[in-house]
Image 1 (cartoon, helix red, strand yellow):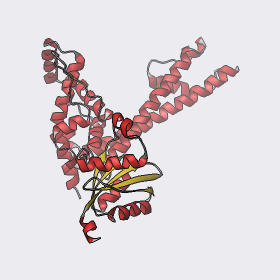
Image 2 (spheres, rainbow, N blue to C red):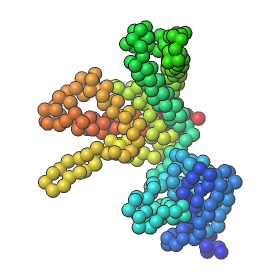
Image 3 (cartoon, rainbow, N blue to C red):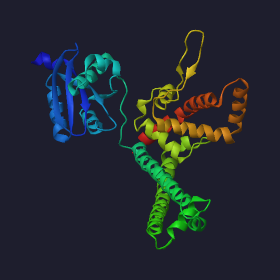
Image 4 (tube, rainbow, N blue to C red):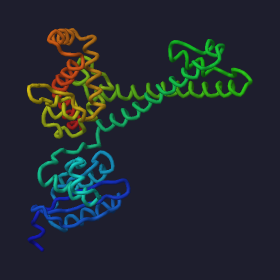
Length: 352
C-alpha cells in the first residue's frame, strides 16, 4: 500500500451541472477507476479523497474550467493539485472510441498524462473576472436595446400614416421618448394594442440606456484603476480593455508569449498553403469577444491614427484586400498590447 501511495495518479473530470464524472489513471496509463460525485463541497471532497487513494494526486485535467468545472477547479487548486484545462475530444476520436461520461473523463486524464493539455485555467477571483461579469451584462443589454428600437421602428413603419408622422423620429432617443409619452392613439383594438406596445418598448429602451450608462461607468472606473498601461494606447477604450483583460484572466502566468495572446484572441494567422499556393487564413477559433475587441481597435486606428493610415496605404498598394490588412493589424495590435496587458496583470497581483 505504501508503494502504491508513492505512485502518481492523474485525475480526469467530465463536468456537468449536477454531477461530475471522474476517472483516475496511473503513470503507465492504466485506468484505475471511475467515480460520479455531486457538484457541491461534499462531492468535491469525496472526489479528492477517492482520487488520492490511488496515489499522489498532483495533476488533474478538467473540462469546462470556466463554467461547470470552475468550482471544482478552485477546490483542487486549494488542495495543491495542478489543474489543466481540457478541450472536448475531436469528432474523429469520438467516432472511433465512442462517447460517454466515463470515456470523456478518462480521455481528459490521458490528455494530461500525454502532455496534450497544458493550458492553465483562468483564475476567477480578481478584477479581470469583475470586468468579465460587467461586460457580459453590458453585451446582453446592448442586444436587448437594439432589438427594442428595431421593434419600435418596425411597428411605426406599418402603423397608420398619422401615427407614423406623429411618433417617427430620426434619432433613436427622440423616437423612444415620443413613444414613451403616448397616452392613446385611438379607440380601435389595433390602435390600443399599438399604443400600449410602443409605450412599453420605449420604456424598455430608455431603461436599458440608463443601465448601459451604469455599466460603462463601472468599466471606465475599473480600467482606469487596473488597466492604466493598456488604456494609454490609441484606440483602446474601457470596453475593449475590459474584454482583453477578462480573456487574459487574473493569473498572468497563463500567457507565456504574445503569440499565446494572439491565439487566445483568434488573431494568429493559420497556414493554408497547398501546392504552388502560399497563403494564410483567418483563425476562426479563440475568443470571439476578444477578436472583436482587436477588430474595434484596428478600425479606430484605420480611421484616425496617422501611422496606421500610412500602413494601410502601403499594404493596399501591395495588393492586399481590406480583410487581409485588418487581419494583419489585429495580429500587430495583439503583439503591441501583450506587454501592456501583462504589466497591468502583474500590477493587479501585486496589490494586496
